[in-house]
Every structure is written in C-alpha cells, then in structure tokens.
Amino acid sequence: MNIGIIGSGAVGQQLAQDLIKHGHNVTLGTRDTSKLSEFSSLNPTVKLASNAAAAKFGEMVLLATHWDGTQNAIALADPQNLAGKIVVDITNPLDFSSGQPALAIGFNTSAGEQVQAWLPDSFVVKALNIITAPAMLNPKTYTGGEPDMFIAGNNQDAKKTVQAFLEGVGWGVVDLGDIAKSRLIEPLAMIWITVGFNSGWTKSNHAFQMLNK
Ligand SMILES: NC(=O)c1ccc[n+]([C@@H]2O[C@H](COP(=O)([O-])OP(=O)(O)OC[C@H]3O[C@@H](n4cnc5c(N)ncnc54)[C@H](OP(=O)(O)O)[C@@H]3O)[C@@H](O)[C@H]2O)c1
Picture (cartoon, rainbow, N blue to C red):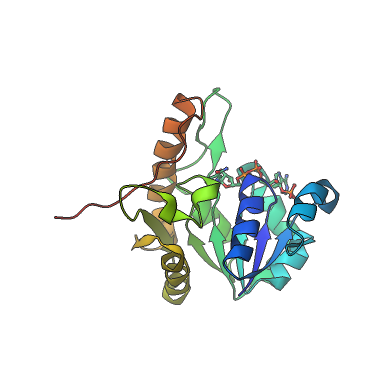
C-alpha cells in the first residue's frame, strides 16, 4: 500500500522504516526535509516530502505529530489531499507544563475528535497511541502473549481496514466504537506514559492485553 506519514519525529521515522520492512511504499511528510539527511541515507527507500505531498501520496495516512503542532501540520497537508482517505491518528494531546506529562484535553473532547473535526471529509481512526514507537508495527516482540490495540472511529469500513492492517502485523484489535471513544484510549496512553516517566524511561516496552476467561 502507498502510505503517507505526517510528522518526522521519533514516531514518523520509526513507522517509515518499519512500513518499508512490511513491504509498503512510504512518503514521510515534514516541514523541513533537510533535517532528515542522516535518516534518508540510512533509509533510502523512504521518500521525503512536504506534508501536502505525503498526504496526496498516501492511500492511508498516519498522523504522527506533536499535539501542539497537529492543527498546523494538517493545514500544511491540506485537508483536500486527505479527503476520502483513512487517517490514523497516533497523537496524544499532552501538556508538559506541570513538569510531568498530563492530558491537555479529555473530558469533553479528545485529540481523535479534534482531528476528525479538522478533517471532516476523512475517516479518522484512533490507534497505535498507547505504546512506544518501535513496538507499533512489531507487537510480536512482546513477551506474555498477543497484546491488544484499541481503536475508535466513525466509519466502519475504515476501521475494518485499520483492523486488518494491525492484525496483519500481530495486534489483537479491540474496536471501542466511534471517534469519541478516543476519550478512553488517550487516557489509556497515560498509563503507558506514566509508567515510563516514573521509571526515567528505563521502562517503555509495556503494552495492554484484554484477558478473558
Ligand atoms: N514517541 C512515542 O513513542 C509515542 C508513542 C505513542 C504516541 N506518541 C504520540 O505520537 C505523536 C508523535 O510523537 P513523536 O515522539 O514523534 O513527537 P515529536 O517528535 O515531538 O513531534 C513529531 C513531529 O510533529 C511535527 N510538528 C511539531 N510541531 C509542529 C508544528 N508547529 N507544525 C507542524 N508540525 C509540527 C514535527 O514534524 P516535522 O518537523 O517533520 O514537520 C515533529 O517532528 C505525538 O502526539 C506523541 O504524543 C508518541
């Protein structure tokens, strides 16, 4: 599949190289390709481009931006380039002002809902925000069984496509419902983040699993 990524931080770079390993064609969107010369020399098959070009390229687009820059990144991508497409929202709306990460929003809205509002003609699916970047497409590296990924979105077909994509790399998938269920998934990320933060980030390789009996 042709996959565009918006945002070239730790998540965007990791996903780009892992998607190539899974056989996809990838364009990594950024405001400044010049800062990615080292990444590019290590990953020559990942195309670097503007956010708009990455959005245009992707049959599916992964949104991997710092929360504070997300609205701007979407504007630069141009919502027209994302119309009718699945946009996987990986962001967590974090506020670091107290010295430790907290959610900036959550009771009345969520990042997933904001992104859907900024992209009214796209099919936004919340996913992949509850684990560390290197694990996103490598869930089989966890010990203790198949971990679960929680997803939310308004469009059933888009969620089925994302579910198949995630199951294809080894996630169990739990569909929680419409995009407003991001209000549950983003706080779940805070458990992953808080355990990591409290350990001085010596612990970040934990994931979640729904147990049944
Ligand atoms: N790090 C993880 O393991 C992890 C795990 C789960 C979820 N997340 C979430 O995933 C998202 C990406 O994480 P990250 O660690 O890669 O974040 P990051 O390095 O802080 O930022 C990612 C990218 O956001 C873009 N960005 C920042 N400010 C912007 C602005 N004003 N306008 C447009 N674009 C802007 C930049 O892309 P360009 O400079 O390329 O334009 C930047 O490289 C975050 O929301 C994070 O909470 C992260």
